[in-house]
Amino acid sequence: MTTPALTTVITGIGELVTNDPARREELAGQGGLLGLVRDAAVVIEGGRVAWVGPAADAPAADVQVDAGGRAVVPGFVDSHSHLVFAGDRSAEFEARMTGQPYTAGGIRTTVAATRAATDEQLTSHVARLVGEMRAQGTTSVEIKSGYGLSVHDEARSLAVARQFTEDTTFLGAHVVPAGTSAEDYVDLVTGPMLAAAAPHARWIDVFCEDGAFDVDQARTVLAAGSGSGLRGRLHANQLTYGGGVRLACEFGLVAVDHCTFLSDDDVAALADSGTIATLLPGVEFSTRQPYPDARRLLDAGVRVALASDCNPGSCFTSSMALCIALAVREMRMSPAEALHAATATGAAALDRDDVGVLAPGMAADLVLLDAPSYVHLAYRPGVPLVAGVWQAGRPVVAR
Image: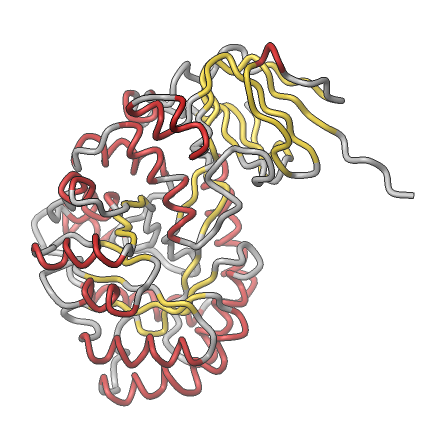
């Protein structure tokens, strides 16, 4: 006989962000975007949200948690990270901060350290970073390979990543390793490397950029990935203008990431195709590149997601709250738009319909803030506001 799952009610929520589209018509402006409920409660059962509404109407539950008037938001969905690596590039960061420009070449430094690390060392490192993310409110994360650049090391990087998330991405086409030509390396990526990586991956990605892979090479890699059952993603238009964003729209990719340098044609293609522009403001903070213009994209009807791009070179932050604050301050997003981009649209960028929203049937991934409103995520940058995290209905962080 199966024992019924215990139910938990979180009551006393001063402000609840649901992101529930069904509540948009009830609320105007930014409150509608976030599906806000004041003086709210949430009931959790079996790892899912069972009920959401005013605290006064909450049904009885086996366990009661009092939020004490604090805000609750959906767990952050980080749709772009590079966590499987070894080594340190703090010297490179210091050099940038003293005037040297950022280029993609530093990736090769991490490749050497990653190849030399054991599986156990890589797994331990990813576990530490995922724990760091969780403590800051991230409950869903995508993890890429890309620091192996050999058949063996790309496959094992993905096998490590798969221990922590189903959203794993094969990024063999990160840069061309020393000692080989771009043409030969693309053949390797689309042949033996793809065959070894595909069993461990859901997505395939390409760094389509000066110093990495051109549009034709990226098209070849994406097509090969699709033929092996992998969904496409793309790094594009990070360092300069180029054809990567329009390639993503041509392929109908669910998302294209970076989008720092965009022409009017790029913006129009994004709006027409429905491809999400995933912006990574931590990169611009860490490289002193110009920030993407999120306001321009939103005003054109483009869906915008936010992600950390946590990696050892261009952006070694795991904080989605920092990305929200930077998006508000530097990219002209409202606090509501930025939070929505870091939760519901981040989920959409991973083609996930079970996270990023707090509504009946959705995963019970939620964050208790030590603040009365979600606005404090941008209003109080750098302050550790996460007081509690539930993942699949289980409390995983409490302070």
